[in-house]
Image (tube, rainbow, N blue to C red):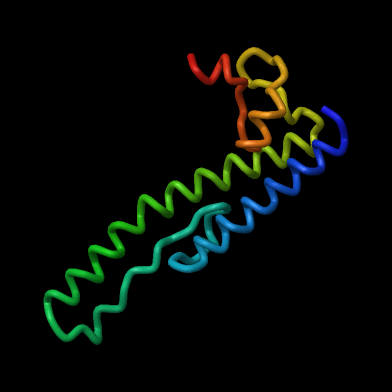
Length: 120
């Protein structure tokens, strides 16, 4: 992979990372004890006027948990890809050690397997 393409993919990864972190910041707090972990903020139920309002806030919290988890997983994959770039192993399939098609990486820069291995 040429240096220009690698720099473009790195920039794309950094952009995706920033977007995921910004989205997480809207409804979570970083866990200071566990690196890369976020905790969805539980709603303050102290000023609730009705049981329906409390139920809605808890339901909103509950629906945010899988979004938090998915964004955390995405950040892990993005960070792994950035580490591979730094280590010179980016764009190599983790399964067959063959090259990952640059078109695949352009669409999904955190891809860790070639299309052939991904389909297995």
